[in-house]
Length: 126
Image: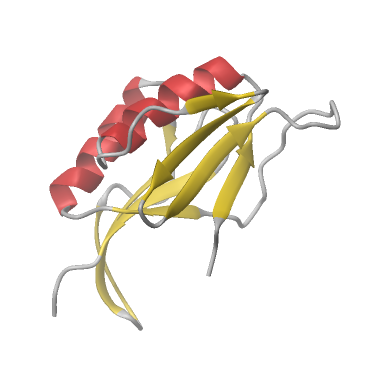
């Protein structure tokens, strides 16, 4: 459905260090520079961070969350720990399993250095 997702960053270098660390735990290579942006690519899509091209401050979307696929709960925990160690902050409940309408999932939520809400999600086999 999506070709790419881009989030605004207040401090591009701080955000790059954060995303290099958290996405590295998911097996994604460090961001590649292109103008005022860094791109992270995988076989399933592209994620990018950017300073806004209009020169206005980057803002986060209230009610918005960007989820990254984790292969295991341990990978989601590593994602969370790397984020906390690189300028992120925890949000929502602590990492763990949640039961919902779509079944059991493991979630690990963070806010990046610019306040964007992200999570690692692992969906165990049924």
